[in-house]
Length: 260
Image (cartoon, rainbow, N blue to C red; front, side):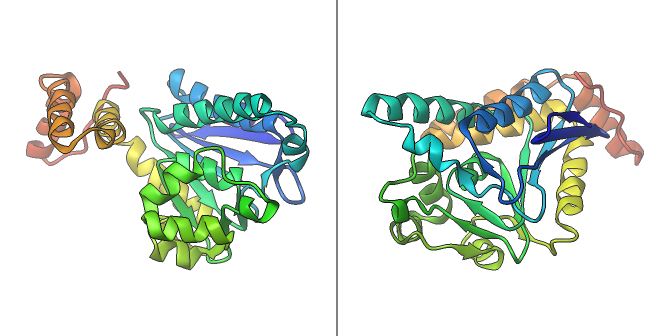
């Protein structure tokens, strides 16, 4: 186990588990958002992990940004500087070529949900409570929530949740497409790790190609995205790992991929 008293991480079978532990509610100051994102980014850049799971301790994911940091913003320039810095880090997480999975139990509010929206997949427990509550404080989501939430659940539902500050349960989040699946709290992290292990066993070059084609391609027009998809798949053609995958299929054995 590495990290510090608040952010701890371990790597097993090429899957990293990052745990947020700032009791009682995992309310994070800005410094920890920075560190959390940089930890995930570095684990991928250094090729220590093929997939990452982020979760919280004590049945809480992240209850939001420390309001003291919000109160410290005295001018529009202060707000711009802070929000653009954190959004840039969230964007780097979103554009990572290896998947980041959020395992959400308990509170997932404000900046915590905006971080989870930057992850590539989200799993939740029935007891999870998710929401962008900033409207209740007389302000608005400012770390990408107004852009990512409506793209995920639709404009009308996204507006409803942001304009009312309503929280949704894990089950409701599943119903509106905010999370991929719901598991009992006791099984949540293991299920997230199982999903990550399944991905980590695949050809890492193909995983990265799918990640690029999806993350970047969905920001293009459909026709341009299809061209980009062909560009990504062409980069796999003739590689050792693709040849190994095809050979293993015909020989009915498990492929042995190189970590290239």
